[in-house]
Image (tube, rainbow, N blue to C red; front, top):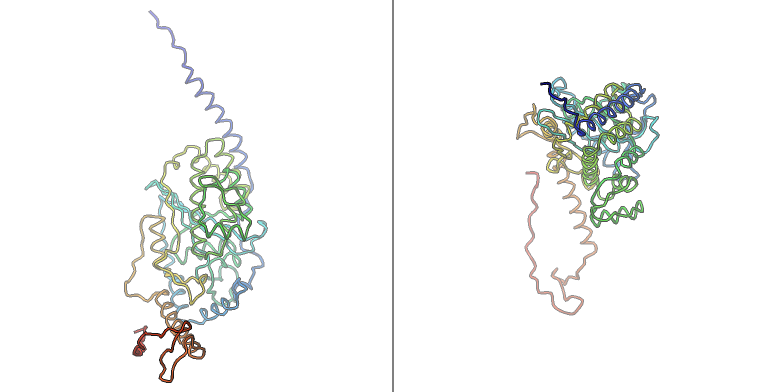
Amino acid sequence: MAKNKTAPSIGLIIFAVVAAVLVVVCAVLGMSLANRTFVPETAPADPITEYINVVDSTDETTDEYYTELRKMTDLQDLVTSWSANNNDAKFRSSAVTTFLLTVKEAAPMDTNYGNADLAALISVNTETGTVSSVSIDTDMFVYIDLKDAGLQNKTPVYTKLKVAYANGGIKLLEQTIENNFKIEIDHYLVTDMTGVKTIVEALGGIKLNADEELAKFLSEDFQTEIPAENEKWNADQVVSFLRETRDGTVNRNVRHNEALHEIINETKNLGFTDAFSFIKTLSDVCKTDLVGNELLTALRATLLGGWKNYTVASHVLPEEDSTVSYKDAEDLLIVDIPMQAQSLQKMLFNNSNITLNENRLSTVKLVDAVNSIFAEEQLSDETLASLDNPATSLDENGNPIAGENGADVTEEPTEPVEDSNTLG
């Protein structure tokens, strides 16, 4: 006796309909994205060469300090020798794809001018199931090789990392990061703060945190009203959060990292339709070396959602124990780049091919020694000034006399302490 055919369940019918809709959507959006014409970033035809020999600061003391740094041949030798050597041994892994994300300073996106306001590396490691984001402080002092920017007649540049973008576009910035940190970068995305606003709007805002001091700065500098706790920040609020500088370059880099981490997490939570829309938004506001078909591949990977289960690990570079500010200028950041190169490789690849000698001379040790001399000179100047204008009246024997309230000063005079050489 023949068996009756079982009618398909309502669940299978719904699944078939949804699958058919997704196929159509994929086909339409996929064709649209695959046929897009992307304009890759190129080095500026007329680089802003005045950035090479000056600091983007109106502070005369900062400019003076930079001039001093550029005259320190020992410092130059250290940063140049590291950056220029062993570039055939840059670390990479077949399991890791690394992207350089750059936000340029306020300038039209159809130009390459302006410094790199924000730079971050994002790596997707299929072996460990990890997405790692590393925010890089673009104020760190580095060596920039200008030959590949078509500036062969220029002397070597020792300046902030952000200046590489102004003189050679994304390619020079990418090369400078690769040379200094001994890694290979696979792709790049470049946008500006207007693009950041569009991205944040596409995500419906992101959650951030601001302490009392930062809230005060944001209110005074950008008239930003801080959202209530656990509420999302809108696009304008996020941009002010990223642009604030009064609490120092290190804290700003930490904020960049926080915002990037939240953007990645929000992206992970997108549904199918929203994921399509978000990829299209990125293609509208970013310049990239990804061509249409490669972007379509990234889109398909997003829809499959495999990476959505990955752990997101966020880091900042440089780490605090490998930096020193030159003299009393907090934004002149000297970094132990070999140490940070080793750390960055481990952050991105979970491994490193760099071995460090514990007794090596580092830029941080060198500048620490200079800072010690500077501090002693300042202390001597302050001591001389206090002798010229004593805060307390002395008697004929050099001892303090009665205070303003008429009470005797009872402290016993102490024996002078001999000077010591803090540099050993």
